[in-house]
Image 1 (cartoon, rainbow, N blue to C red):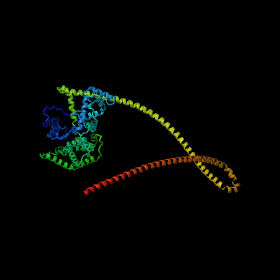
Image 2 (cartoon, one colour):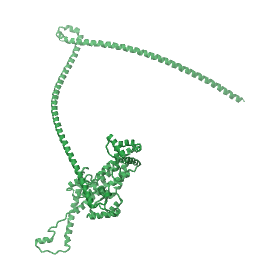
Image 3 (cartoon, helix red, strand yellow):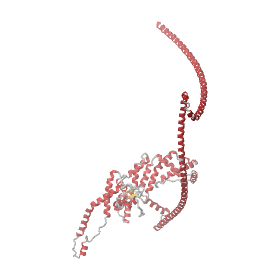
Image 4 (cartoon, rainbow, N blue to C red):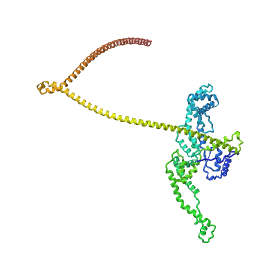
Length: 613
């Protein structure tokens, strides 16, 4: 997609809505452009531009960049945000107008290994400048705090932790919006359907944040009028990345009906002219056949055209309706495109499958979502025609434009040269890297061969180890059998000792067996002696432990006796003290009773004397 600047005109009249509307119509007429083929214009939110579009009867789309900028401004009307923004602007101003602070900031940045960036100032007419200022202040927060701490006059400008929290929240909220608007400023891809998706993202986003809520409410209020909403729905429906995904259920039927009707209109406008054949031209047919030409009445010139047109329209109407319905249904039933893909490229490849819808896509997807292109033209004009060059003639302006284009081409050439040099350097690095990779591959090959040899030797060692393990298991089995035989022999010895009297009678019969087992008995005797020694040592240890136990028991008994004696003595002392206290309490009670009795007697005597009187 390409954008062209057709005209930048001098407009000395008052910029009223009526004058702007007349100027726009004159421009359209000068370029021989039909107003019927115009779909929409994108302007800012000025009242004169709104009035001009209404007077001309043109569909107008609000610039999403201006609208989003105003929504952000309205959402920032909070005393906490205002205070934090005021501190941020004062900090930036303090560093902007002092070369000493700039030098100190650069020194601190080098010492703290921070990026050597200068602070940015907010410009009310530049979109995204507020987020750029806040982001740069947060990036250089440590360096700014250190420089301001060393300056006693401006130390009060150091942002507090509350201000830092507010600035971080603002930066986190505005960063996605800045990236979104930067993407909308493009001129070579579709931009009018993504704002519509952004409105839905704002509605379903983080509703608990006040800034998000205010921004979403402001955008929804400005884009809720029916013509704008229908235009955005049409653009979204014709965008193969979204189609009817974000169109509400109650509006999908009306959008499909509008698409069908506009597809019919496109077919009528694009219908090819029917060639005149000899069958349609009686004069030609007569001349070819040699028959005398018959004079025609005036009505005969319109009869064939009207009848043929009516017959063809009646014949083609059902086929066209079915073809349109089939094309529309096939388009909506197909899967959506990846959001990172180019919808224009997709329509270019699919225009043979959707010929009518592709024409509507050209009609709606070319509408820009922002007026960034016009703003770029204004900026370029301001750079060319400055206060010192206000008397430039058109030829000089053209020369300046050519000079700027030449400098731009030189810059691009220099950039391409640097890129070529970088590519050559990268190619050399890749060549050296490939050489190193080949060396590494050979080394890996040698290592692989050594690894295979080591693996073979390891397998040989493994087989030897398995053989040794088998021999070890066999020896363990034989050792187990010998231990079992040893147990049996010990039981036999015990049994022989018990049956010694009976074996004396059969001594002659077992003499040969006694000789064979004599050595085994000797071994058993040695084992028995060892066990006897162990038993003696165990008994000695047991006796020592018993003696120690008795000693400990004796000591424990003495301690218990002493503790019981002390406890008994303490109990007796406590008992005596309690008895003495009880005795004193009894004496005190008796003395109180005597005093009470005496007092009662005295009172009785007083009562009796008063009674006798």
